[in-house]
Image (cartoon, rainbow over all chains, first blue to last red; front, top):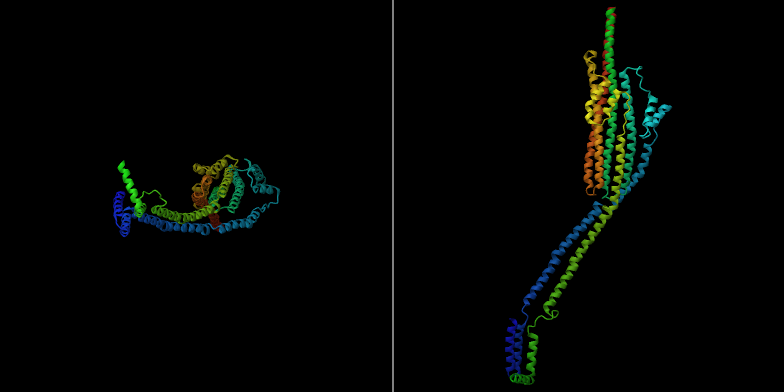
Length: 276
Length: 272
């Protein structure tokens, strides 16, 4: 459409140029024609250029405005989070300090406490008690027969059938059995305590090199160690309960026998007085 | 054809005689004709577009690219910090290995606690000992029979004073309850050892983020274990309280008996 218009106007312009008479008129026709033909022939989408400029400017505005602000905001937040993690939550200096403290406390206490714990407590001067004491304090569970024999050497054997009534023999056997049971349990308990101490040392050693991310494993396993320790304590308490219960049961049996004997004696005395 | 030749000849002669007009027409045609967009680089529209796109490229490079690079830098620093300081894989593996090593220790403890310690030699005491060391709550019901067989029943009412009978009955009850509690506690301790081993296996398979969950459960178990320990300690204290009360009752009855005996002797002397 624009080309057709241009052809029409350019034809008219040509006609004027050809037919004009003098140079003044030719100049006027030329100028007028140039202006008109320029207007007709000039590229129409001048408006589109303005639209393109506006569009480019709009994109630039978005980039320099919203996106720039958003990226700055994200950067600020992430930088703050990074700083927070490195300076407040997991500061390297305090992590190293904590590790150093663990190492320092290991140096301060471990050997000291171990030495105190391993002081020899054996005190018996006579051979039989000495042998028994050695067995009950050796933290071993593979020498129970030695325990039984040294116990019998020190405390004697159960009276033979003819030497005591069945009740006393049974009670004496039960007392000895519970004492031996507990001494065996204590030997096992001593060995378990040694293992617990080894576990505690291993956990503490690891803590001296741990990172915040590996510590949950150590704390969790330390707690399970605590459960084991509690279970062990309960086993020892159960043994103590059995022993104490047997002790008062024994004394109670003596009380029962005393009551029976007193009644019998009273009967005998009454009979005796009646015969007099 | 002849006409065309004639026209061209006329135009030629007109152009030669009107050179200025011909030049004007040519120039106007050249500069004002709406030429198709052949050379884009020379087009003002394309130049504008190129300039605009360059600006956008520059803005994207500086503003978006620069900003993203800064964020990437921060993220890389954060990632490196977390990998090297907070969650180092090597230390996490080391901790997991330790958990495995400790599991071996726990197994040893569990085995130690299951070593048979039975020592009684006579049938009647063997029976009670077997019940007491059974770690089986289902055998609690057999405790009373085995206990009475060994330690005897409470004497009949005619055999002792009510005071003595009460004391004997209470002492037997406390001793029996303590023995039953010992069986219970043994069984509970076994279950705790099992649970602790299970928890430890869970810790070995856990991630640093899930280990605290297992830890929380282990904490709960520890509290429970403490409660059972306290319960056993309470029973031990009850037993010792009964023992102390018995000692006290012995003194009281001894005093009463002495007074009665003195009175009886005085009466006897008066009658003689």
